[in-house]
Length: 307
Image (tube, rainbow, N blue to C red; front, side):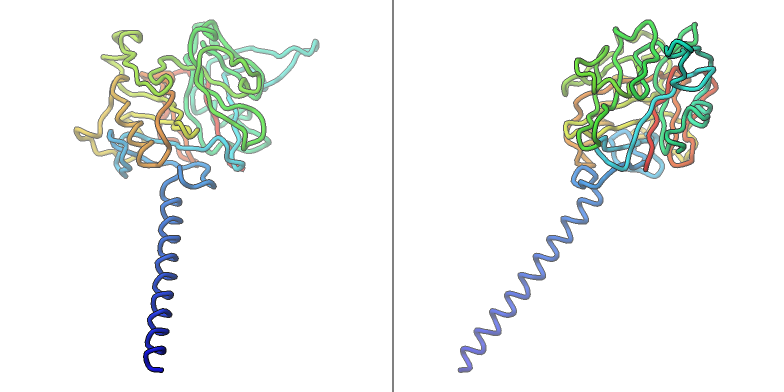
């Protein structure tokens, strides 16, 4: 009888231990999902800073906005410099496109920056501006095009229309074959990731872009569909501690940064990457704080809204 009681006690203890282990494993998995956005199906958007190895750092030089295009909590819009209301039409029902010079701070705070009466939670500068005050590349805002001379030659970044769960991010030159992809697009110049392969684009960009101007704004898309918006600028409105692994970089040096961010946040591999207007132009805004602004004109801005 004693042996049976002893054996039963061991079984109960083992079962309790197994239950505790299962709870610890479940808790660990939940915590990992919360700390690693790529493993969290509810993840929508996050701002953080990293060093040039892609590791999070409170004094990092890389200011990052990471978001999931499929999140039902998010929506998107593009704004450009216009002297009138965005999407305005003339008496013949044609869209009016009277362009004017505007700065980053104007393009993210004016009435045209609102979506359904709501101001954006995040914004980044995008396209170059021409001497005619038009954005130079392919820019489309909620299906309405505001583009310039290079719309078919330079790459653009965009988020498709459709149900949130079906939205995808793309980077490519010119209009997409499927019209649902031509919904919110912003132009840029310098596609340095193509189908998962990093490319040194300095020779194509020229001396100023790769030897003189080091502050940059850019976008990258990962194999799991996440989007990384990044500005690398020592003049950012935040605490930065310069070091050998925390400094302004040239365009041919961003593979380590982006691949580190993707790896550390469980995002898959970097698939596509493109520079926005760089030099004196980077602008970044998140959650009522402007981290980068500039005094020059901006061709377009990409805006994110949180419902």
